[in-house]
Amino acid sequence: MRNKYELMLKDFSDLGIELSDKQLDQFNKYYELLIKWNEVMNLTAITEFQDVCKLHFVDSVSSCKYFDFNKSDFSLIDVGTGAGFPSVPLKIVFPHLNMTLLDSLNKRLNFLNEVIDELGLNSEGSIKTLHGRAEDYSSAKSDSLRETFDISVSRAVANMSTLSEYCLPYVKVGGTFIAYKSEKAADELNAAKGAIHLLGGKLLSANEFMLPNSDISRTICLVEKKENTSKKYPRKAGVPSKQPL
Image (cartoon, rainbow, N blue to C red):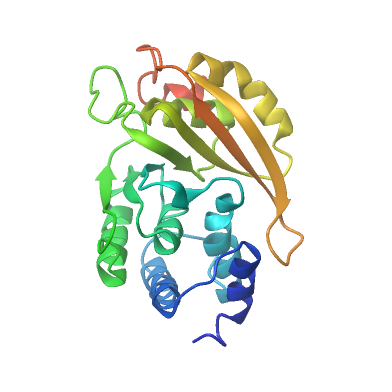
């Protein structure tokens, strides 16, 4: 097994992470389930083994370069989790985290529920799936999960203004929103500063780096929740994507 994952193990080691045999087995099961389910539904366009390892698994955990997940038993919500990125790799590496995986498609959540069961991810900190759109559980009306999480993460494809309106309302004051962006995010972040401020946040850092042992550029953005989000936000479902702040 370790020979098969030699390159990924080196990548994780370069991030300061040494995977146990149990964690490696969990990543292997995750890969097998991802490929199996991807044959009958669209989970990912990336299916080649080494690409999945680097572009999904390592990429998902790369935020640990800039945020210390070991600091506490954080509560975390992954908004628009899709096939479980970045939350499932983070849960494998940091099993004490308490996670909620939010997605709008039930069939993706069926996949994730099997992943959670097969990988035994509920043995330490909790992990659960939740069906709905990003705006469904954080509005002032629903209020069910509004400002209840230490961390919100998203690797979803949306501009930073829209992502901030999706994610910051879930974060309690003093918590952190972690956005995974590709290269050249500076202009996008600059355009989003007003939206971040409106939503009660402050951009702490935008960290551009290369994925280990590659020429692939990524940016991890850390936004601190400084104030309660105005009850005006998030706006109705669909509006944040069509009319970014």
